[in-house]
Amino acid sequence: MEKRIALLPGDGIGREVVPQAVKVLKALERYGLRCLFTEAPIGGAGVDAADDPLPPATLDLAKASDAVLLGAVGAPKYEHLPRSKRPGLGLLKLRKALDLYANLRPAKLFPELIGASPLKAERVEGLDLIIVRELTGDIYFGEPRGISGEEGTREGVNTMRYTEREIRRVAHFAFRLARGRRKKVLSIDKANVLETMVLWRQIVTETGKSYPEIALSHQYVDAAAMELIRGPRDLDVVVTGNMFGDILSDEAAMLTGSLGMLPSASLGDDEPGLYEPVHGSAPDIAGQDKANPIAAILSAALMLDHGFGRPDLSSRVEQAVRRVLAANLRTADIAEPGTRIVGCDEMGSAIAAAI
Ligand code: IPM
Ligand code: MG
Image (cartoon, rainbow, N blue to C red; front, side):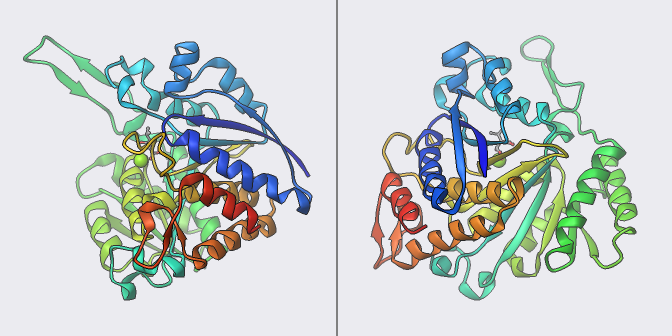
């Protein structure tokens, strides 16, 4: 199988972790996968190269590819720029342009890392949940938006907005996903306060009627934040809006030991999908070979499964990660007494060798 993959390393540790995922994909060549990689800048790298966080050539490349593998965007040196030049906008525009409305963020605990989780072992043992975050709507994209007025009396405005169609399609996505799992969907909203979320709950409930085999429940986002700590093992598929999903997925990631472990897949009705680690560009450790490449490598595994229909190759990657962890290799973020700390590059090579 031959696949064209757009590599968008972006900024900071994105530039370190993406090459590790590439090593692992290359190691899969012996199983009949051939990837043709083309690299392009996004985020701050896009601003540097073309004065645009999503240069048109990068978007064209992404559209012409079978899948997009992204690192991370953002660095302090771009923070003073106007919104149109902010690195994060490049990522938001790419998601929107490819209509990637369903963002899958699985939080699965590797038994080898049970000691790295900040929660007690009995609370996280066997943890296997997946957040389906709506990715192209909500307060992230709602209009009107902006800051207006004179200094001293200015006003900032953003708009939480969802259409029935946007809610329905991501709800369908979550229910379909739950069919192949433990058949539970938890929908998270804030219907006690926000009309947008009243509509969210109505449409999710209505959509759920087509899936009688799936147990649907609802929770307000504040209670859900607590539940993620109190009893995360009970959760299976969690579906929520763009902003709540952004927040809760970082929280869920931490349950697995480190934000450096959580991969994601952003999918729409057509190809290509976008695969990226949930972690950011981590300017504090960028350029020091300290980053954990596992989230990026597991993002490539999601690409093999969801993008290329090769769960066999995807589980080979997961097994390789587990073998390396079982051999006690750790990046600094997941280190424990008795383990050997390695850099990003060595971790990537070890996982590629374990394929
Ligand atoms: C994420 C990130 C992005 C988001 C930023 C970088 C725009 O936090 O993918 O979770 O908020 O969606
Ligand atoms: Mg985030």
